[in-house]
Length: 437
Image: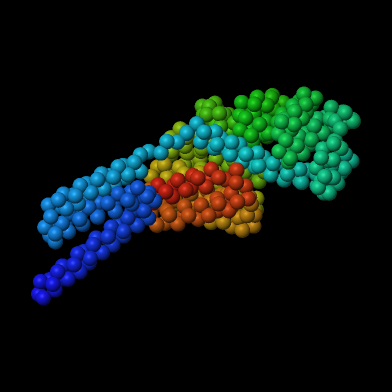
């Protein structure tokens, strides 16, 4: 009777032991799958735990060396499987960087085209709203108000112009209308015809601006140079020099860019001495460009001086005309913040970024489409700064808000803003990875 009771207890102990072993194995497998989402890894962990359990069970309960050996073998096989799976998951992902580069280039090109289109629409609205416009422009405006873009384009006939200047102006207006319809090849042809028929300063500058906005900098330089040879006033000369400086900066010809920018600054300061209300904003514009060039050349102290001088001017003008000059204040603050970050002046950089962010938020409240991308840009910059300061929670909050904005923008224009979504996700992923480490 006593022996029978012992057998029953032993049997219950065996069942309980196996329930515990299998329970632990299942929990381990589930946790593994939740962590790495790999079925084989989960199976390997399950085998390892069962094997260890079998060894313990065979040694302490069954007193079986064969069971102990079988459990040990199963545990070793499971452990090896686990290690292989883990090592395989840590292999670097093979990325086709050429394809990725082309993808980013295409998306950046589209973003530039959208920005040019928006800028052109704003310019057209302003130009077609002016008084004393010629009859043919009134016809164009009437068609546009009806939403009949193609008819507006067809209504313009350069061959019916009174002179070459008017014919060129008609070609430029057709070019602008084609831009609003993303027909950039057609727009280019009409710009070229305009400068061929009437090669004035304004017409050369118009086609140069077109090429610059599409990141075609060698072509932009050619026509800015043409405009420089056709100037009729010191202001036009300074404007052409500034444009050439900006173009050569984009062309990575920094030394030549600096020569153009410094000459432009000299002329603009001379003009500002006589009429500060008109020309000081131009001085600030060129100071900002020089600051960018100095920063790129790692001339940080000189760059800071240029940015601060530009910022002082722009702050003063923003007091008089907040809507017109506040975006320039924010732009220079962002540039200054980038510079201070490069100098490891974290607190100064944070102050610059936060002031710029406050301004861009205010501007976005009034014009969401125009300034929301700037809010996201500053938040991303601020996240980088906070990460460098090891303020990981603050950095995560900045990245997440930037990501939310970029996703909202991508919902409306996926092609233009997907690279920004990817960039911010990458920054957020790196932050979270480093924080775990």
